[in-house]
Image (cartoon, rainbow, N blue to C red):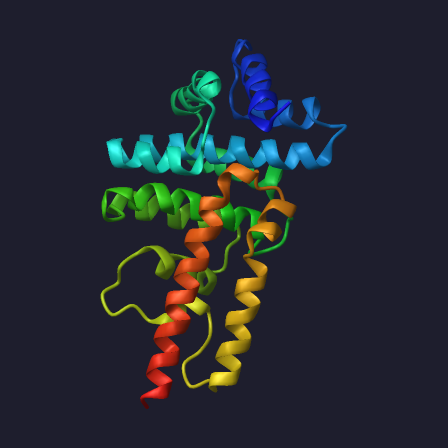
Length: 239
């Protein structure tokens, strides 16, 4: 049985609840998948991405077709499961609990408890991918994403590196993308680059709970890291 089948069964179970608020969803993930920690991580990630995508759409007030397509790029959902995913999306969008409540509960469900948790960064990356799908991150979306990062305990400097991977800042600083100070030697830059590539290899993301279907997040992240490194390399060679 694929993760989407398991997720579909879970969504059907949660949707039948009379309240089905964020607390019910989180508790259901913990209870239903208590005997399989690996599957629980994968389902928790999926639930967090779907629920927070819905809350972001509600905060922004507009859902464009570009955003829908971006959502579908990350979530390659089998046709027989699209209705279940839509049910969870709508459930989260209708829930009176605010997005901050959702983010805090999802951080407890998915996070490591430490700052700059890799899985929570994965979720934030996915939200950025959806937000920028129509060509730019709108002001409300930017405020939403920054607040999510704060709740996820993603440090400001680290958040700026994530932001720089996604937002066209004009002459964007490739050093910010790599999270390294200007003035470092090329060897130090290369060491940092290699670590980022290793840390963000798709196999690493799958190992920490991303379902196979969500590798779009990893490939777009690696592309931004490669582009930043190449820009720095060219600049240092011509210096």
